[in-house]
Image (cartoon, rainbow, N blue to C red; front, top):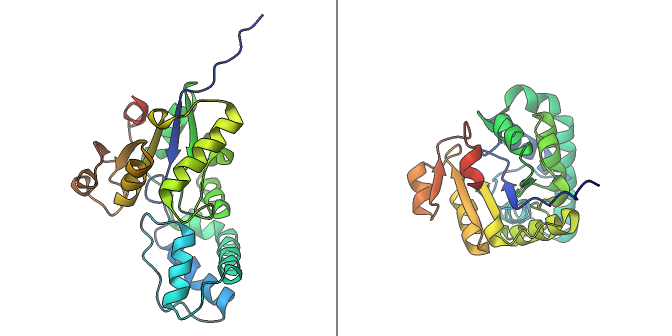
Length: 233
């Protein structure tokens, strides 16, 4: 009789933008198209997006453009963004890219039975899926054990949501000591520290290695190439 397979011991929560992929301006172009489609007004100013949740970004972007961020309006903007990414799949694939080492690292970790890979992204759930599908990375990640920018406005709360979903789906313990967040911004670092989980920061976005260390990260990588071992070692 075959012994039952033990559940994974480590939960890896991957940020998407500038950690696994970069849209190289396509994301901003989609926002420029989606905003007037949802609101009837041009996007005069976009809220700062680095390391924030989409709920936070949408609400502030509506507010600074003189529009009350009601639940109905936020939902309309979210729907327009999803439609914009669906329509821009080819554009995203042509202009954007998976970052160096991203696919190789995800593939190597997917072969490790002690590791469960999921997503912790400020993006909408639908947009996260589209981005990962476009760059061929979705097959390595459990999107149902993940947390997204439309689940909660607070990034530390997303950590708890992802842990709970992973426990329910696969039965692992996934306490804070068993959870690693991988991201590229000081906000990712602060989310991990606030939630009490481990952080591995990668300097593949706008923040330097020194800036990520100053934010509190003790493990900082220049990129993902050859990064599998530091992520859960």
